[in-house]
Amino acid sequence: MLFLVAALLLLGVVLGTVAHAPLSFTLVAAAVIGVWLAVFAARERHSRRHENTH
Image (cartoon, rainbow, N blue to C red; front, side):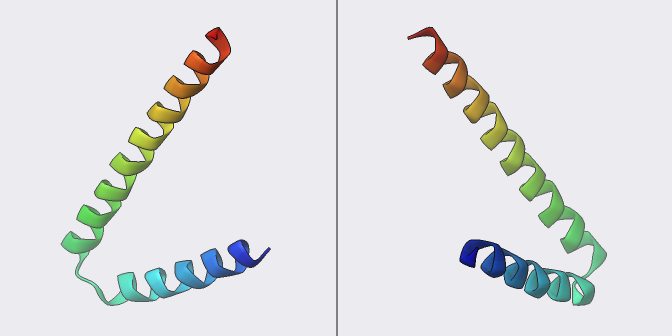
């Protein structure tokens, strides 16, 4: 529960920052986060496939 509260607080701070940031910076940051999430998802999927085969 504490993690959820911290995540929501961080989200509020980030959204407040994005409102004052230039659009180009916001788009670059969104792209970086998207790539990071895609890499994380691929690693998780890869590790679960190998976990099921052993």
